[in-house]
Image (cartoon, rainbow, N blue to C red):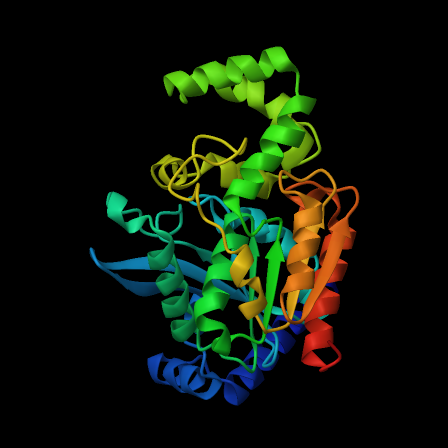
Length: 348
């Protein structure tokens, strides 16, 4: 009886498979091309992932991107921090954007882990990164009917610079956890954050920096509990979520140190004098600014940015720090999704 039942099931399955085969044959290369042409998605065979060729003064390199979701009017390009960190810490978006119907793109900037990492110090300049973002936009087919640029930290700085040159291509802008002035950021660190630290720890950190002994394990052993766990991500570092752990593990110091400096305790690299406060009023696209109570960035300055751009909104993450997408996630992601929906519905 059992054998007869099994044979019947196998026979039924064979018939069903044959019927399916009759209705939908396995596609060959021609069918795959036809589907690609129909959808208009160049990333279809890669599950959303693409390497995009970027032209630079030092030749052509490739940067990694990955699309998640599909929405014709809301497409968000995510700019990670650093410079030289990775898209990986943005993976928190997977818990929020899909349910909201948002189409979004992960992207490792040139020099970051998933993209080419040329040993060309002359490439690590702000204007070149702006042109890179523009080339990525063009390759992805994003435009003012759907394109939202969202940056955290250095990504927020890069987003501001992009908007000041190319805002005609934007539908909306999100600046998260980034001031519009590095001198003001450094002043906040010196006047507010450093005095709140254990002064013996601060003195030892500064002595290591004076020697440029950044690879000394003592350096981060001091900074992580005294600064990073207080102002970067407010939880014990050994409990930081996996995407954050991977992003820090994959940081490229050849990009990070020349541009930012050796740590998040202020900036001392090529960006040290960057200041766009006087130009903020030129940003006319709908703009969301996100600050956090315990951030390395002054939340009052972040609120000022939202008031100064032409169409701004400010969200304060009361329980958050520099990565408030993790330590105050509901405030952060509700704020972002509400902004995207309001702009899309022309309610902003």
